[in-house]
Length: 71
Length: 257
Image (tube, rainbow over the protein chains, first blue to last red):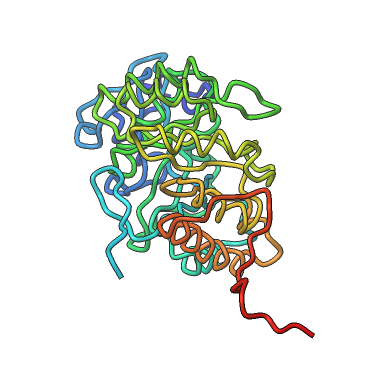
């Protein structure tokens, strides 16, 4: 796969072709304006406004989260 | 009726009941329970997106109905709790957080040391921090001193329905705390919520007592009334307890046969 890099996504190691956080979100089947979703890259929150200009790097630790029912 | 609104995180609320959104039999029952409870604040958890696809978004379900209060449930370190809070702020566009750092998987008691570390960091980061904590005055004073907006002591272990195990401690906290005391965890039935409010709590946060009741919607209504009744009794001022009886009726003018 051309340009694929290996990252950890929500604790799972996988190869991705996405070059930015925004491309990763789209590859996960979500729209970029979807509310209620947040992303962290290597322990730092990446604001939605900069998803498009934030590159994915090999071995990145990416967390994609959302709100669920909770007490 | 005078205004008795409840201020938290720079906003005013009419309801003093905060409701958890977990453990309901269905989304429909959750929505009906929220409506019956009269709550304006519903708690939510922050979790990894299910890469294989999962249930619909809580946000979409509750949009416009209530304000969501995200929690850091399940976190066991200050670092995880801080990142979870920051992700919650980004996801939900709210800057308040129910800070929960668990120190023991059996009792779900708070890890006070980690809670204090996370609270300090989150206050510095501009959060309105609402920490789940012990019912001892030292813990609560430290959290208030750090700038937490309220303290949320457990009545008894999370999900236990054990009620308020130490009412004297909760009453003392309420008397001395410089910030509102929100009774969090342990409520089993309506009388527990009444007691919390009578002891001086500013509000009650509960989840399992409603979600796992035989009829969650009916219990949600009972909790709404319980919190209101307890608050009204607190404001009205209860009589002092006495060891001996004191007749209510006049002690003169009785007939003699």
